[in-house]
Amino acid sequence: MTNYSNNLKQFKSNIGQSNHFLITILVGLDGIQYADVTKRNEFSTSWNPKDVDISVQRSRVFAKEAALTYSVSSLDGYFHDINCDPKLIDADLASMFDTSKSIFKKNEEVYKIYINSSNQRVNLKLEYLIVKLAISWRNNITHYNSTTKLSNQENNYIKQHCLTDKNAVKCGLDASRMIENFNSGGCPSFKEVTFLIAKIIQYVTDLDGFFLENVDSVVFVKQFFTQEFKSERLKFHNIFNSAPKSKVRQRKVTTIIDRLPIVVNDTIRNFYIEIDFASAVKFFSMQK
Image (cartoon, rainbow, N blue to C red; front, side, top):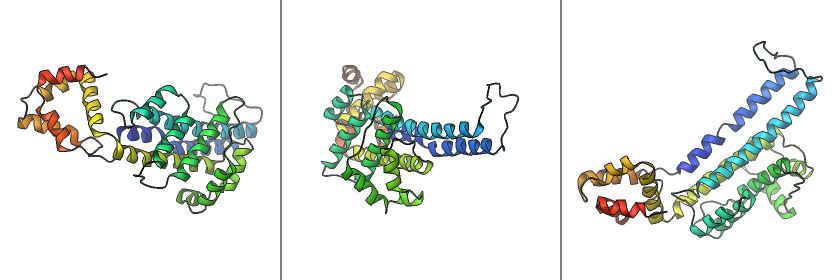
């Protein structure tokens, strides 16, 4: 059993090197500004700015805003994926995700479920507020006339807890300056972008573990096998066409289930070991 979902794996694949890519772009722009880089003849695109310094400054702003925007979009992608079969979220949250396109609202509902749970892994309040800040900043950058703000209480919490936060200390973040920069409609600094991205990753990683621990394993396994049946009929046939209760069936089903990122008890496992092929086809083909 893995301790993370395929959704988290895909999310990290999307966002994982965002800071590295941003640094690469900024290093290149620095070289352009100080004439350490020249355009090769093979580069056919027209590029001849009247003022190189201004062009570099504007490009830095674009790169940092693009990195933040992409990272928030990756978070939105994770929220979308955990609502796809096999789902990591319950029916009520899934219904809300289906009806709302707003990542801001999705984040609010996810955190509400987390703090109301008796099975909280860690205190996610700082991560939640930083993610809320990142989403709001992205919205203010990309949405015309958007002026989303955080409350004074939320701002103060961020300032206070960033003083001892490992990510904030590591990158030398000035949380007060970050809040001021956000409230004034400025572009996030390089340190601020890297901090926001790190916190988005940490937030999703912790949420993923929480979802895996609390998912309904019966529903999850059913949705998993139903999805397998729909997408890979031959694989499904090879599993369930062997005799029920046979060692071959037991080995095939156990191997697949044990690779799932959730704890599955013997009752659920034995159901898929014992179900006969005809009943399995009917059972899975009737699922939505």
